[in-house]
Image (tube, rainbow, N blue to C red; front, side, top):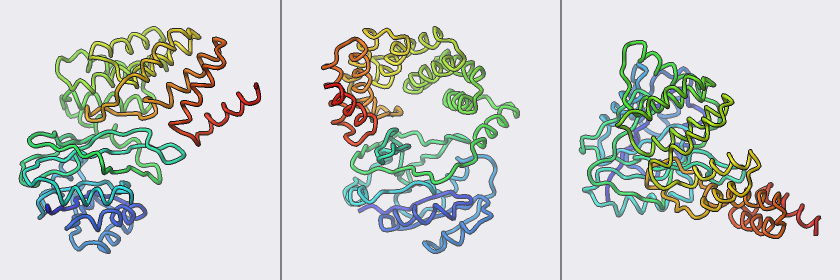
Length: 357
């Protein structure tokens, strides 16, 4: 059985850190907590779980802090979590199974990361992250923000356990953008990945014109990960839409088709474009196509699970109803209910159809 060091970087997390550490403490052999300047009781809370609590002077570089935490590890593998991450009870036994069965020559273990949830607690955004890294594999974090370790060597995907990102309060929403713009001011030349995430930060802050320019520039670069290219097209479409540039938004969506067969998320975006224009036959085509697309979590893209069932069915219900196909509309609503039987929109539709009967 492998041994695992949990390596964390934290700052002012006294409220969320206990939940995180309780969820992982029984699954790891060592806990390393690196504090980057807390002014609350974060370090005191950490010492309730471990005596390996260290300080790291914050320098606006997440990779340097994470690499320092990995350097302090003494076990075979490093596991990273943020303070508002949790290994939920339903995944803990499978995590233990992974620990007991992982071949020791494995370099990286990729685990699903649930990044957002609906009101019923179901994941609405998930993607794989490099979660366990062999300490002596020579792999390091890169990137001042949106930091990552490239999964190379012997990589294992394990889909029976996951980490859940469960925020309890807003963070410093402007931090990442400040760091990136400071790097630009210092003459930093962004890598394709950094430019992609810089554009997304700009969009998140309502700077759509600048975001669109950065996304266009990123898409023109010959290098860059294909999944980031696909996402950049969708992000660009949203920027153009918010700027009132509907035709340019559509062009951005169709540009994504150059990177291969469409994922369901893109199909739903295209369906929404035509639904907004009341072009129902075209909307039907794209929502039906979304239902036919396989979900490929291991491709590394951001996955919206609802696009692989619930959303297309709900929108097909709307399209067919507006085309006068009442029975088909109700059938698709019932199909949506097989994905989310307690969803308020599905239940409201059911009451509506029953009232019409």
